[in-house]
Image (cartoon, rainbow, N blue to C red):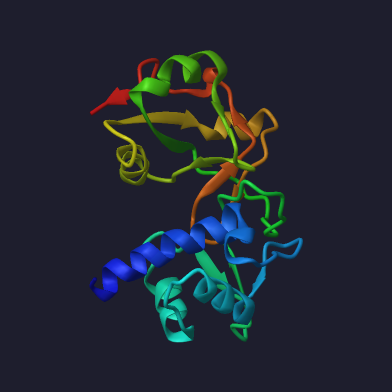
Length: 187
């Protein structure tokens, strides 16, 4: 297996551990989502995977979605967003751009049209600042559909938005009345 393929595989496992199931590596996260790096490395190795500090730093540095962050002295690591477990990653409220985008797939459209965009098993709904990123998100599960959202109107009506460290816009829910296109674009 190439280094790149191994890093991708390890990155997926780190995502599982740092966002959803720390017990998969036998570790715990603190209330702010931080894991002790030494404990994480040991825990990942106990699962039979090969990882060292250089590999972990490379995965964090080269991850195209910038999913992870170290603290200043690289003794702690956490996922920037996307948790299904309750942690506070210290998000700051931000004013969103006029439009935001949500990438999904066609099979979810009937429920999205009825109920809006819900956070499902995550702490927040994930939105993109640009169409292309939303399209890539949708493509991971099939033929992408992009929903254009009037984020300015949502904020004006009291919705709270956060911007994660890796540029993902987060909110609690997007009601259908904030969709700008009555029929989202199916590619």
